[in-house]
Image (cartoon, rainbow, N blue to C red; front, side):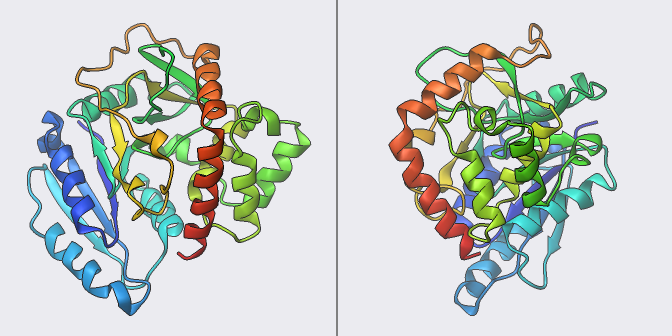
Length: 298
């Protein structure tokens, strides 16, 4: 049995169509339940766009089943995802999570479902991730890094139980345990600054709290050595992405082989990520600044 797919949508019809079409090219789609969470418009300005998205959702096919949850009021991205994931996991042991701007490889669902089964009972593993940066150095076929991530991911009920929405408590604990530098990939990516911004009310990121929750629990997330997901929200329309072209990737044209992966933090991959962040430091600063401003508006 395949894990259900939770798809979070808002008002970007063109992006959503690309997301759904790519997902349907996965052979496992026709055996997967698709659960759509459609947030309501925040203001009257985008009500028509939300309605067009909802009209499209009602026509989608190609999955084992499709259920649609139309919110009557605007929850915002963070609340929509946290409540939606919690709702799915109250009924299922695992879930695959996508937003409406994530394009997937035809091998995405195979990787996700195989990983969810393989590491189902391994308490060291908190989640599975489908995206990986377009780095200059070679990465292992698949590898683990401490923490969690947010662009095409999956988890189990046991993993989501570690999610702590209290950003201040998370930040205080990181400081108390002297983990800020490691949390920030040796100072190359200002994750702690993003968490501080959430605490200060300058963004409402659920993802930074998910990462911090997993990191403090010393849990691992599995990554593919070649990306199986691509964020097309980097065109300026998305909540998460604006102004950082370095996040663009080419989707893997082959399956990810999990046979040799070891359940331990990959020092090799950590250093590759660290070098990637260091090389793209200026772009990252600009991206974080834009992200904070965008999230504040939601």
